Amino acid sequence: MAKKPVNFTLNGQDRAAFADDGQNLLEFLRRGVGDLSPKYGCGQGACGACTVLIDGETQLSCLVLAETVDGKAVRTASGLAAGALDPLQTAFMEHFSAQCGYCTPGMLMSARALLDHNPRPTRDEVIEAISGNLCRCTGYEPIISAILAVAEGRVRA
Amino acid sequence: MTTTVQTVATLSEAARAMAQGATFLGGGTIIMRDINAGVAAAQIVRTTDPALNDIRISSDKVTIGAGVTMSQILAHPELAFLHKVARLIGGPQVRNMGTVGGNLFAPHPYGDFAVALLALGAQAVIAGQNGGRPLDDLLRDRSRSPGLVAAVECPRPSAGTFGFVKFSRIKPKGVSVLSVAALLPREGGRIRGARVAWGAMAAGPVRGASAERALEGQTLNPDTIARAAQTAAEGLAPPTDAIATDWYRREVAGVYLKRLLEQMERG
Image (cartoon, rainbow over all chains, first blue to last red):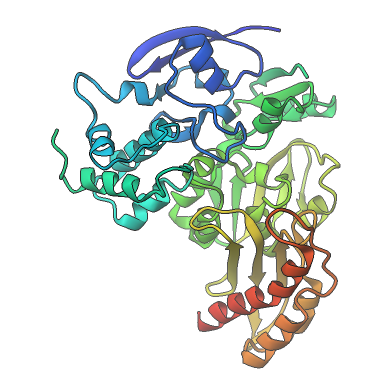
């Protein structure tokens, strides 16, 4: 099986690693690169736990062929805190938006992409933005509240 | 099963690999699932050919590259007639990945974009072949590869003649109990050339012949709508799955056709 070289940026840092033939981006990030923040949930595009940003767009890393991120910018939840926590991370803590926490990295990336494109979303836009991310603990309300709190500037930086 | 992925620069090279048995990888939402589950074909081919992402607009038709994603459709103002459909495919991540070409081959209960294209009378452009192939023909047996779908050509519907409804149990993101699309061109107020297409009412997207017969030549009014709704499920044999039984799908088909036609009547 041929290994394929992949040069990309991960959370702003240049990275180079070899991907296995047919390897998905989630496995590549976790096993090959050592970023454990994206989670394996369903492996079929239903749960959103593996959500990462590729060139600013949310994608499901378990369904992305790893070699296709060559030359692209990948962002994961582990890169959100640059020195201080991202306001979304603070808001998730303040609003009790995680119980088991397994969906949280994917939720954070969907929320980050939303606020990057649309800093003042409506409640419906927030619901739409996280509609590809399943959470079986919180009932979603605390997550929606946290994202709206950031959008409305109600979170301490 | 071990999978080998070959990346080629052009559509014609990809088409050649497919002729030798390789499976085409587009946006990944179908084929990567198979790879993850260990049931994918041994040979996968993908291409970096930018032609796959072309969108061409003319006065009477649009040509959409097979690699165009649902999000790219939503970002294109000239494709507004398809926005409602694209918005109802998957969640945000899937819309950033899933493609027009891939949706033609999405297994039940997926493939709602193909349902809309079928109602619109779209044709598939096959790499290396002249002329389009009607989706009616391509969707009839999706297990037989037509070659590499390079693009989809779709006549632009005149205002108010095209509609689409998708019924899911979970909102805003859920798979189809069923979906239904209709193209109802009018001549002198009467429907001429009615096309109705159903999703999740058969193994793949299918035409609704009974509804089309009820609509053809009529004016779109409450009586016509009631007759079309009454016969909606005739001739359809929907699958039973975790989402709904075949009985339930047949029972509610008329309800959703009625809602769609009433929306179109209101304009």
